[in-house]
Amino acid sequence: MAVVAHPDDEGLLAGGVLAQYAAAGAAIAVVTATWAPDSHRAAELADALAILGAGKPRMLGYADARVPQSAPGRPRLLDAPLDEVVGLLVAHIRALRPDSIITHDQYGQLTGHPDHLHTHRATLLAVQAAGLPHLYPDAGEPWTPSALFLATHPKSSLGELGPLLTRVGKAVHCAPDEQITARLDVSAVLATKWAAICAHRSQTEGQRALPALLASVSDDVRHRILATEWYTRLETRPAPGPVLDTLGPQPSNPDVWTNSGT
Image (cartoon, rainbow, N blue to C red):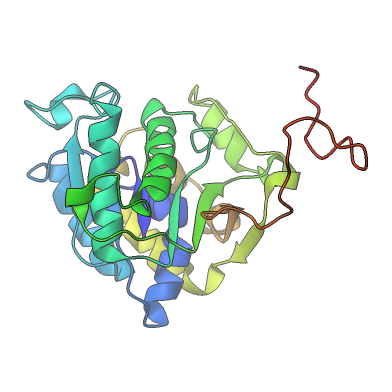
């Protein structure tokens, strides 16, 4: 299950992994936080998900932070009560019962888009809440995924993507290399991934949207940018360890708690 901010993020974020799992016969799903289900972006999303093998659109229907007309009569995702957004995601997690969830990283997926950042926050909270029966009791039976993956990009591998973004004034926020826990070669399904991105026809036009930027470069450059995906895995359950009888330093191991200087 992928939880993304906008239509087209699913392909840009994790199109290769989603296509690989679908090709292997796994059930995959995408939950999209913004844009109305009756908008042109929703129709494009449906086409993209069909290409990826990801089923029907599942849209929360909030407005894009930068395009308020994307969901007439609905608040922007950033303005909606956080508890409400988390509750909707919990309902999807409990209904779909995914083994793994993918979402944006804590840097806002390269560009730092506020919707990416907020989707990241809400998803982390929802993954924890979904397994607790006393939270959102009307949203279904509790379920805790086995893994949560943040789709990210290491600084050392920014390559040709960085200049592509900065030339149109976009910010670039990369993860430190030591935070990367998975590197996947998705070149075998790159044609599917690119076709899904191109299904967002409104985004391949113009000059600033990432699909349009990718469409403007050669096939070789686009392959180098899209053929690898990077992820950081977060634990969804408490890590096993010794039981401590104090929050203070232990004589036998004074560094058991990370010393931040406070």
